[in-house]
Image 1: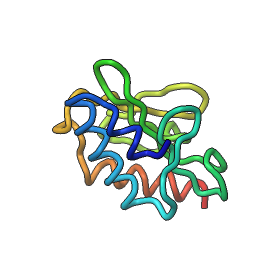
Image 2: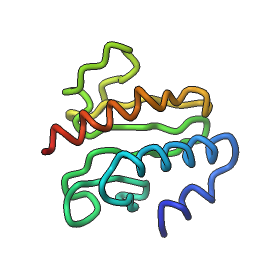
Image 3: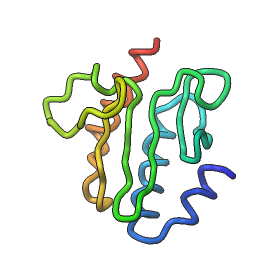
Length: 115
């Protein structure tokens, strides 16, 4: 299964959120996303899950956008919520909650942490 397959199986509005996140993350990351542990993940390493940077995962009422080392990123917006280990996430209930400029800055910062 591919990232597109994963996204295509979602109902609206989750599909719209996932499509926008996929495009946004794909534009910011040097390597394409792949499924890892059942959801889309973007990594810098040679295989999915090797040096992971970002992911999204759909639940019944929202899509979580997350960064593996997100707790290390300065976030004056206060939108990133601490999660497991060093991760930080944002729960998205609608596509209008995606701030392209902010999310792209987070992705750049998260990628630089691995550089």
